[in-house]
Amino acid sequence: MSFVTAPTASTPRATQGATAPRLVGDLAVWLIILAELLTFGIFFVSYAFARLQDVPLFNASQSTLDLTYGGLNTALLITASWCVVRAIQSVKRGAVPRGAAWLLAALAGGGGFVAIKLMEYAAKWAAGVDLSTNTFYMFYFLLTGFHFFHVLAAMVFLAILTVQTLRGRYGPGDVHALETGAAFWHMVDLLWIVLFPLIYVMR
Image (cartoon, rainbow, N blue to C red):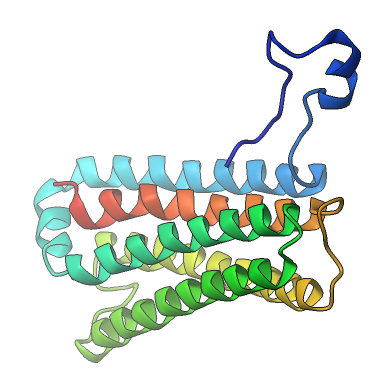
């Protein structure tokens, strides 16, 4: 998804004013996104530092995670982001019902992520693994849990936008709210793309 639009060298001077660079989505949401990225960045650095203190423990604990579940969740979030992009493209073309269908598909992807993550958590808790098990699992539950609640928040945001889209609230000349929701959703996707290799894969 492109974050800004800008005139090209071939754009006539008379029309360049109409295609001036702009921020896609609401500024307030972008400030929230920057704050969330900073927060997660601090968590990531803390995790990396803790891992350096006890690499064998982290490697052993990481080996108990299910890479298949992690991979499926990665595919689900990336696909959901693609669906959100298609939704905005459809609404911009005036195909509002199709746009709503793409948003529903994105919500389905998010729902699949939530279901798989809950199964992962349930399996760990059933095995007696929790925040107090060791340092790795403390970070595992804190990082993935914090992200999990961001997925839920993004899904609520998308659900509201889906209802509004179905009601005809948005159209070719009004996709600002949809772009704002998309920006937040893409942040959630980006965070998981970092979390998956960091927590599940890297040794």
